[in-house]
Image (cartoon, rainbow, N blue to C red):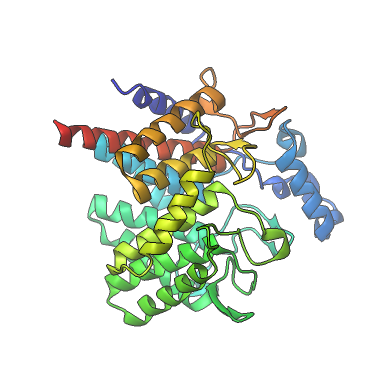
Length: 393
């Protein structure tokens, strides 16, 4: 018996108990205490306040009056997990729950009068070193993951409305995020920003290419290919990608590398193109060789195991099985999950810890960053295993 099935059911039960809402590593600016002072208008204060909430192993949010809320990207991940469970079991309750969450996402779109097309942002103000993003301002990663979830939901339910909204999101990416700056063409993380980040741009290219193929729009497909070519041209000779172009983006980590590879595979399959096969092959080789220890621990960075993070584990499941898929990849994936359960799962709480450093463990329950990824990845893995077992039988 696959013991991960009851474990993931328990994880889902804990998530349901919170109504799919929760805290987030980056939600500290939702503090009603901060918002009641003039300090919230200071970029430095916002950055420091956000980092305090993100880095503290003690959950200060109740004290700072940060409410638990649903995050659109997290809800998109929960929908994708529910659809995996529905596909594996055929049980209607998963589909009903996914539809309820999908309908909620439709109410959370960023203002159409401003953006003209369907798009989504985070439920909190977000201060990065490169830019400030107010709550609700659409970003490419949230929009792509929500669009993927709604499209999959539309296919599962045969409800065209979800599919139309999902494909409409690609027009937002084309019209509001396509950027030419510093000799590059790419999709920006948020409208008006010129910071170039590979995973954001590649996920945008993947969704625009996917939508362009289904809408029979050659211009969308060609733009998606041009954007993807930009990131492929900047892939290291060893197959790696740094996070982005700015000086503080010169690191190489596991889950963003996995994002890049999964996005390129989606674009390749959507457009039936072999153009990026070599980049995927080299990137995947680098990924497998640099982001796992001998015992199956998923490393955060190429040169450092720590912090251990369920986000790295979850993306490893998708990368190893979607980009890889060989028997050796499946064996490594099982090893990675087993090691994560030893290192990061808390059976008594039926949830995963946020991060574990060499000396410290942060057990704060984060809905989007940790539990949503864990649930979706394990639901995908359970369905993948069940279908492969059926094929062998």
